[in-house]
Image (cartoon, rainbow, N blue to C red; front, side, top):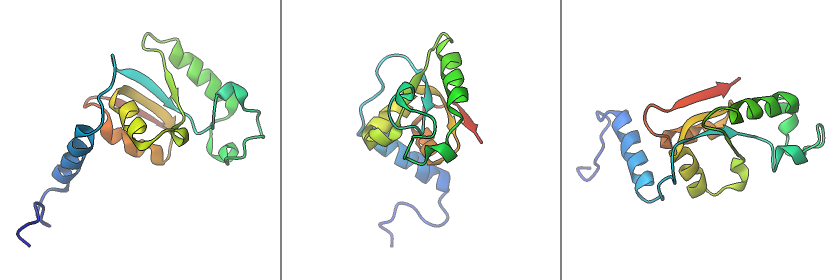
Length: 129
């Protein structure tokens, strides 16, 4: 149909950028300067979780708790600091806002990295396998 803006010959990258612009157009912008974000798979505050007691399945999909705590503390010691994010407790709009204001996203490999689409150009990603 001629009413379709995109055809099979259209560069799919343009479609992705148009989708990104559409979503960012209806979500509020980031507040303040860009920040570093650690995406935790643990539910709640990391200090409140006992090793082996997490019922979310995190024990097999998360970093060792000690290593995760060390990583968070090391990131927090930088000039930019770190914001620890628990995406499971955030709405889609909150997730878009979080990544929209991130210059660095760090976390264990997984679906949450689809949100890197919302990050500013020239941002960095560290995906832990």
